[in-house]
Each structure stands twice: as C-alpha cells, then as structure tokens.
Length: 345
Image (cartoon, rainbow, N blue to C red):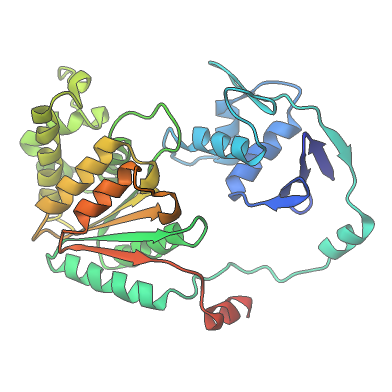
C-alpha cells in the first residue's frame, strides 16, 4: 500500500518515504511517527499516544518526540511555521493535515518484496582503527588519564553507532556510562545535554556514591538539573546562567562532581550531535575538559563536520579544545572495500 500526499509517497510495504520519486533517508522511529500520523489523520494524535505506541515502556528524555516530529517535517518539506503536512495542536498533540490518496504497490514490486530473506541483526563491522584509538583512550581513562575523543563526519557515517560500541565495551570494563543527545531546534534550556547526562549518571550510579559525589556542589548542579534538588530546598533555577561568576561556579561544580564520582567507578560520557549544542553547553565542555586531568573520565563528542562553518558556535570551541593535550579528533569516513565486503557477506 502506498499513501501519497503533496510531493511524497509513503510506501507501507517497503517502509520507505519517497519525495519527488527519490527515497528519503529516515531513522526508523521517525518513519514510524510519520506512518502513525498518516494512519490516524482523521483526528489529533496526542503526544502520550505516540509515546505509548512507538516507545512502549521506555524511559525517554523530553526531547525524543519533538526531535522525531522535527525530522519528519524536514523529510516531507514542511515547517512548523507553515504546516502543510503536520500541524501542531498546542496542548494536545499533532495532526496530519495534508490530503492523502492511496494505491496498491505494483505487482512485480510486491512479489519481489515477498521473497523470503534471512533475518539477522546487522553486526558492527569495520572501524577497527577507530576502535583501536578509542580503546587506547578508554584504557588511559581507566588508569586516570582523562581524555576527550571527538568523532567527526558527515550525517549517517556511523558516529553515534561507533560511540555506542565504545560505550558497550566500557560497560564491560566496569565503567559507568551516560549518553545524551543535543536537541535540534528551539525551546531547550541552556545546558540541556549536561542535564541529560546528570540524569543518566544518577540512574546508573550507586545512590550513596552519587549523593556523596554531589557533596557541597548539589545546589550549583541543581541549577543545571533541577531534579537533583532535595525536596523542600529553595529554588535556584532562575539564575542558572546569569553572570560570569554564576556560570563559573556551575562549571566548577560540574567538573568537581565528575571527578569525585569517577573515584567510585570510571566514567564514559557521550555528548551526541554537538553541532546542535547551545553555547553554554559548549563552554561547559571546554571547562570540564581542562579541569579533569588525572580523573578516570573519558568524554566522547560527536558532530557533523560538514555543518561546522567558521561562524558556527562549535567552531571556536573546537579551536580551544585542539590546544588541550587530552583531546583527540577522529574523522570517520566511508568503509573500506574489505569492510563493505564483510558487511555484504
């Protein structure tokens, strides 16, 4: 079954979106969000319904669904300001508003797709040299030589997948791992990825060790992640990023906390999609890297180098980080022919 709208086609048998006849690369969950909205286009689909239908039982950050909606809009040539396809119904959810026509897929295409295929998970192949370099940085961090690895490359080249593979290996070595993705779009508070990391660390760490690591820095860190505040404590969120001294206090508290927490277990922290990070988050990264020497911490950042021009906020941060001896930039390129052959096999 093919559902056509605007200049797009949603092929429900091939799980594919085509625009002007050309396939559009989509993350599976983004495709699922779009397909669900099309299937229920006669009504408003609530945010809770989408989360329950597509991420059942999963603990998610608040940014997951808005990011998926934003990606779906980009894929179909829509914008929030001029919603021709996906309309936001404030306080309710989303509605698919474009006119849709349906038709069956060609018989030949259906027959081809109905041929049995051996189902098997796609293994992580290639990147041996990259993983060797990352493995060496991990071993150094486990021994108390903090480091920052920056994975750069074009969209879809495998930056996130490589970081996840490293994280899995770090867990096997007994490290506490936290991953956070920077939010694409407007509305996220300052220091959002660091807030997500603190949440992840709280969930992954021994409660007693986490509370001990917070120590006297609990108030300062609660300005980044208010959920860390003890019940009944006064609110300090309003001044989270006001003034140079307040910002320095927060950054110093963050670095000190990570250093203390790493004494109980090594830390591997992944900041994904740094090209979307806000300025405060990038400043915090630069500060933390400079203050973690001697700690059992490995920071991993990923970013799309094709999006970082001279005026991009990340550009100046990369220049400053390049002067840090503990920082290593690793560029990811396409797989080698031998690796492609392994993947096909």
